Amino acid sequence: MVAITMPTTTPVKLAVLGAGLIGKRHIEYILAEPEAELLAIVDPSTAGKDVAEQKQIRWYPSFAALLANQKPDGVIVATPNQLHLENGLEILAAGVPVLVEKPITDDVVSAMRLVKTAEAAGVPLLVGHHRRHNPMIRAAKQIIGSGRLGRIIAVHASCWFMKPDEYFAVPWRRMKGAGPVLLNLIHDVDLLRCLCGEVTSVQAIESRAARGNAVEDTAVILLHFEGGALGTMTISDTIVAPWSWELTSGESSAYHQTDQSCYLIGGTHASLTIPQFEIWHNKEARSWWEPLHVERVPFETADPLRLQILNFCRVIRGEEKPLVTGREGLRTLEVIAAIGQAAEAGQSVKISVT
Image 1 (tube, rainbow, N blue to C red):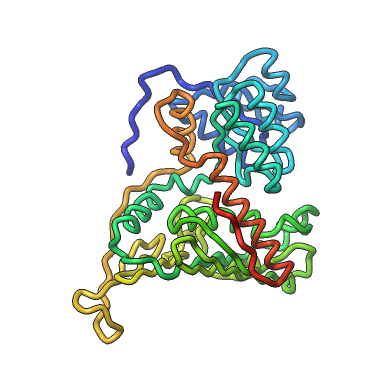
Image 2: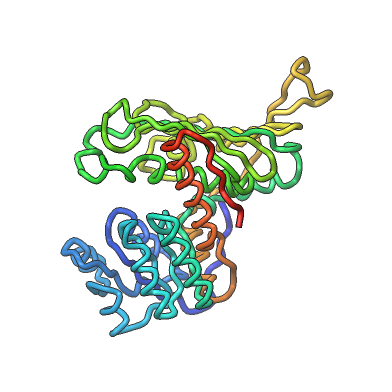
């Protein structure tokens, strides 16, 4: 496990905006974290008020109501995607650092507005791509950066899982924009960007044949990275399979962990599997006629959601830089938007690297 130092300063006072599924997870992590204090829960719903009462935490129906009584050191926004821009702008206007759940907003234009507002104000804006905080990803990035794999030639991500029929009983989950590309693959796109560099163009094919909903259930994506590497990603929420981050990483107890890998990163000297963390290589000449050897590389483990909270607290105290900035969240969203455009147009879509 990663050694985490205990706080030597006053806990950072945080508020959570939105007490839904992900908001509740943030609430639990803050309550368990010595470096943080849960100042308030902000949610206009009766359910949100009930959560605050259960946790014996102050409740407010809006950020304005919270601000009228007390100013938090930071706010985590865990509201529906379409509210991220409005919520983020209001919090930034008050000069309060903010961590916005992924996606940063529901479209690139609003995401750019939020990022520019934060940068102009000099107020920290972080995005909840929590998987980057996983020590495994940091270790993989170090291995790639060390040159041990040689030049990265190709990468592949498998995101196959089965969402049960009852998942789609909620109407918005059957509508365009609520599919696995935006809701699930965005995490994987962010990790491949983190490990392999910026994506400069994409091609994609989407299908909704399995369920027939307005939203895609399956997609195949081709990626071209700035450094020349090529990538493939396949995602489907209608396949019974063990090959996805959720089912292989052991990151969440909500899923039954398998012993498989979901990412393959291939280089001219060796290849790496994630999360199995196997390095496949030749000991002598690099050749398909030579025997392959595998090395299982150890890495530290720690809860990435806790590490994300710690990073946010330490950014607020001026001790660390954000691991995932607003601009990083914007760039990942740009790739997701390009995937949708490529699938609709049936042709390659270029992405400018800013």
